[in-house]
Length: 410
Image (cartoon, rainbow, N blue to C red):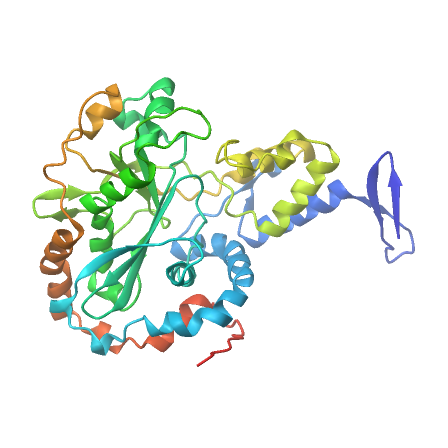
């Protein structure tokens, strides 16, 4: 039974002694949030404040677990209908000839076969993949010789506030606003098995700094008008950032190929964000703000900025009287930046100059160098990749002890 008092929903519950306490919507939300944070390992410290857990990669995966479960649940129909075609392009380790691997990029367009493969491949990531926002360029990394899917890449608009990037370039707020359009962020970047066993992930990390990607960007976004600014900025892809989801990265560090450094480390994030707030709880927070007629509730269109969800959660926490540091998940991601032009920083700082692309290699050139540098030597040192079976790819989508409900249509 429910009552309404002064415009607020009150939930009636019966306790063991027969009394009927009234639990407000605010109280219900607070209990749910505290229970959720406790389940993630947040610890109560001085003054009763909850602090994020500290630990290894297992702890980080636990923080992502609810978000990942939401992602899998919302993708059940895609998995059921598209899994068989996805499995068909996953390689068996025994059929790979490392000396013949030839990587290429296939640009992904929405509502296509390639888009389905991209989405299914992204479900194998232990950290759930976001949909990105604003400008987006997605790729399948294709092994042309074996006709198999080696990995995926997704580039999108970078976050507006990233101190380590802005300090490196020497930007003030005005510079960043004017020239951030020349940077993308690689929010998905990696190899699928068995290619990841052969260090193909390192090769894929280098592929984002190629002439092919630069030219794709020019064709797609070189003359577009900014949605937020309303101005035509003649954007050029001068740099790409990315960050490691598991703290310090062993894949992105020391990426040297053909005398060129790729994706150099520039620092760490501060460990704030909202990925550990699952969709169901976020919608409840949003409903609560809607009752308060808060303006953030419906400002989720592009043009309101990429931090709308973060601002909405922060506003709900403030209205509920909850501590803001619950958005401090504690995962300090290592940030990397790769320049596509030799004079990228000069142009980003001043807004003047022509990009020097004289040392920017093609995808095929990077693939050949990576094969010689990493892929073939690893195949001779470690032969475990040969035991990989494509049927095991489903185990990367569904977590252990989760019942699989998959219908293969042949």
